[in-house]
Image (cartoon, rainbow, N blue to C red):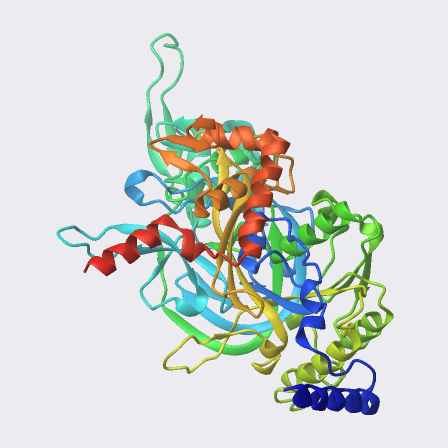
Length: 630
C-alpha cells in the first residue's frame, strides 16, 4: 500500500513538473467548490439555483419576444403608429391580464400604458392572418385567445381566456380583439363632422342609454347632411326621435344618433378627430372591460411560417398592448432579473463592477429604478458578434469585472453577415462561432483551483426560436445552436405568471408582476426547480418600494416547503411564536429583520445540507406513503 502511494506521489510530481505546478492535485485540495455564489435578489430563485448564480460559470436566461416592423400599435390619442416609429415614453393603450373564466368576470380592463424599452433583433417569424389583415410576429409572441376547456367528468366545457404562442395557434382559434385598425380621414366631410361634433356632440364618461358618443339635432337640412356624411365615411349610427322635455315646451322635436358600441365610438373619434371631444376620449376606453369593446374574438384564418426576420422588442408599463387590433403581451422580465442581480451585489459591495454588452438597449433610468449604480456598469453598444466576443474575452482576462452580461444573444450578428449582401449564404455561422468563443472565454476566465481569485459570473439573455417542420418533440430552440448549451452551468426559462393588482374591478391598476422561473439545466444542483416570486414596479398598499421583490412572501413560502412552520388550521407556529393567517405572518416577517435573518439562515442551512424540496414537501411525502400502502 505504501509503495502504491509512493508511486502515485511520484507520478503527480512528474506531471506537475512537465505541465506546470499544481496541474494535478487531490480533489480534497480544490477550493473551487468553496467559491461564493452570488444572489439573484430573489430567495425563491436562489433556492432553485442551489444558493444563487454560480461564479466562474455561464448562465442563460431566456423567454418570449416580439413583433415585426409595420405592426400597428394603438396609442392613447386613438391613432395607430407602426411599432418601429414608437419612442420610449410614448403612451399607448394596454390592458389588465386577468385570465379568469367569463363567468367569473375575469376579462380585464383597458389601461394607459407607457413604452419603457425598444430594441431590434432577428427571430423566426410567422404570418398570422385574420379578417383584419396580416400580422407578423415571432414564434414565442403571446396572444390572448378564447378557448374551450376540456370536458370534465360529468361537467360541461366552458370558454376560458388563455395566453397562446404564435406558433401554437390553430386555424379557427379566436383572438381577443378591439377591432380593425382605422386611419385618420382628411376629407372635407370629415372636417365638417369634426367641427359639427365640437359644437353639438358629446362624449360621456358614463353610459347615456348605453351610448358614450352621440349628438342631438333639430330635424332638418343640418341633421340630414350630418347623417349623409357619416354614411359616406362608413359609419352607421343608431338614429331615433328625441321628444322635447315637458318643462321646455318651446323646444322643437329632435333626432338623436349615437354609435353602436365602444369600437365604433373609438373609430369615429380616431377617424374624424373633433378637437374638443378628443380630449375626453379616454373616458370611453380607460377602465372599459376588454370583452365589451368589440366582439368576443377574431378567428384565425391561417398561421404560416415565413422564415427569420427582424422584429422589434418592446417593453411597456403594463406589459400588454394592442397590435393590429389584437390583444397581445410583450415581455417576460429577463433584463429585470439581471439588473436585480447587479443591484443586490452592489448593495453588498459598492465596488462591484459589471460589463454590459448592449446588443439591444440599456436603459439607465430603469436600471437606477431597480437599485443599480450605473456608474459601476460599463456598457458596450454593438450588434457585431466578433466585437462583443473579443471585448468579453479581453475583459475576462483582465480580472477587473464581477459580472459579464450579453443582452441579448439573438441581436448579435457576425460581421460577414452584417457587411455582406442579402445573397450571401452563412449557414449556421453563429452556431459555429459561439463554441469557439466559449472555449476561449473559459480559458480566459479560468481561476486557480488552490488559490483564491476574483470570481466572475457571466449571464446571457436569449429568446425562444422555432424549428419549423418538427413532427414530434419540442420544436422550440434558443439561437446559437445546440452546442452552446454545453457551456452553460444553468439555463433558466422565465415566464410572466400573473399580475399583481390593487383596487376594485372598475379602478384596478397594476403594481407588480409574478414571475415564474424554471431551471431547465443545472450542473451544480438538481435541475427542473421552479421559483415563483413577486416583483413590484409601482407603489402599492404593502408599502414595498418599486423595483423590489416581495422578500417576506418568498421567505415564508420557502420556510413552509422546508417544514419550518407548524401549521394547524389557519395558525402558523414557529417555536414560541404563532400567527393567525398567512397575511399576519407576512406582515410580521416583512418588518421584523431578526425573524427575516432567522428564516434566511435556516433555509440556507437546508440548501447547504442538500435537502431538496421534494424530500421535505408534505404533499409529496403523503403521496409517497399512499403509494407504499397501495
